[in-house]
Amino acid sequence: MNELLVQSGAVIALRLFDIAYSIDLTMAEDLWGGKNGGATTRSKLNTTPAKAVAFDVPPVLLSLGTLPISVDGNLMTATATARLYDFGVVAFSLKFPVASLSWKEFSDFANTVDRVIGPNVETDLWIDMLSKIKDSLAPAITRPNQSNLQEDHLIAVVHQWNRPLKGVEIFDQVDLVPLLSGEKRTLSEGATRDLLRQRFSYYEDDLVVLTWDRAFIYEPRSDSDVADILEVANAQLLELRYYDELLDDELPRMYDLVEQTHRAANLLAPRRFANLARKLYTLVAEVTELTERADNVLQVTEDVYLARVYSAALELFRVRMVGAAVDRKLSIVRDTYAALYAEASDARGELLEIAIVILIILELAVALMRHV
Image 1 (cartoon, rainbow, N blue to C red):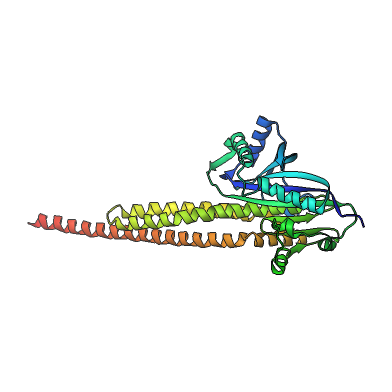
Image 2 (image 1 turned 90 degrees about the horizontal axis):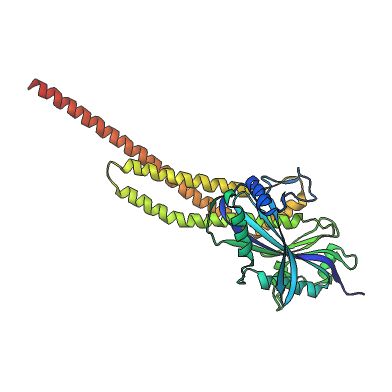
């Protein structure tokens, strides 16, 4: 039997950055088309009906052209794109097309791409693309931040083998473990089982296998819906991680401010209570708004297959776990706000009572003076 070859496919490297509170997508489209003459499109899933799966606010896909990238001494051409999400995340994609490679060559190439431009590599490639986006779209970026948080994902896609192959047959024909783990040494039986646990097929000739930071997709119809869904899940994770860390920083400051306010036992205490309560309310409102926008970025209703893949990705990436942590911290801030608001009201009530007593005393004093 002839050696199994990847007749056509691609290796896709994703890198996501949280750059701002929000991005005005309409303005970004106008700016990108005007300054760079570049193509922009509003993202949608290719083959899935809009009523089954749809973006709440469709992100904007920007074409960055092709980039020559040296991969182990060989100059490769990658197609670069950037997808803008309205909640302030930019997702960059570098797509390396491949053809007529043996499985080992394909797997080795994917690992090489990760080694050259992956998360553990010092490279200016991603930062240069990010700087270009920030400079070109500055007016559309609301409240930019300097966060160092990033997410990355490596996706290996096969569109065609050199002979017909069903999805379930792939496990018997090729070893997915080196590709999905990036390891050269043989994994234990338990580690291998865990690595290949998240597997999905809809038709008999397709397959998706998910891991924490990599994915394998066999899709003979060349649609990118699954890859797009994985990007969305990573964008949600990044946004929630950003606000999780923001709240981690804010909570100690909040405790210090509350303590300082409590020590201010003077006539200005009610105002200080009220001012601090307003700050906390603003923080809660902003974080709640942005996390809800991130949570609702993709609406999956009727497509059961994509819903399963999407749900598995959210679980695998711990999106719900991080979201629950954000909710707990928001609950602490809300409770503190409510307590401060109550204290401010009580303090104002006490001042009012004191004022009334003083007025009564003054009236009595005036009355007594009149009779003296």
